[in-house]
Image 1 (cartoon, rainbow, N blue to C red):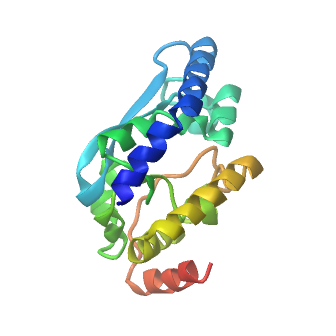
Image 2: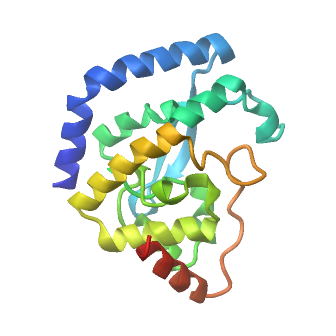
Image 3: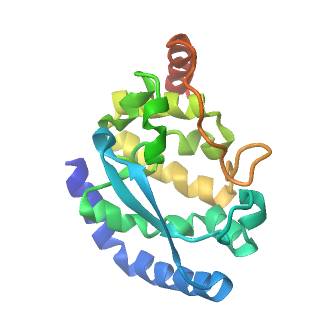
Length: 206
């Protein structure tokens, strides 16, 4: 049922998001040139890799994100318009509208067993972590929210998340981590499962 509703929602709203995507593509082309899209291998359901496509928001190069992120890129991220190409992944069955955000494949060996449960469902364009702080959360907090969603997912929870996502975007909250232009690298596992359990209690209470 979740898959059917995902496809129906994307198809029925195409009259809105397709023109927005074309406009955003034109803005990226005018501001940054080619390539228009940013492509990166991400981990999907059960950790299976797929090539995620987003609108490019940074200049190419090896400089830190803060130096490569352009004014147009900041606007695209703040409005989440850079995420519009991911609706194609929803149609292909690689993603869902709601679920844990897909993260780079290189993170797979770094998760604790509890954190790795986030891959039991399709990744989403938005999720429980995104409406509870987005990039202002620590990695451990984000993963705890993701696992809480896996354990409680359902139609009405998805509706709640989608509704709260609209307000999150309008308020432009949690766009970047503290002291970061975007979100820092996830490097280390927590030392034990106790931290995950504590965070899960917090996630369920929000």
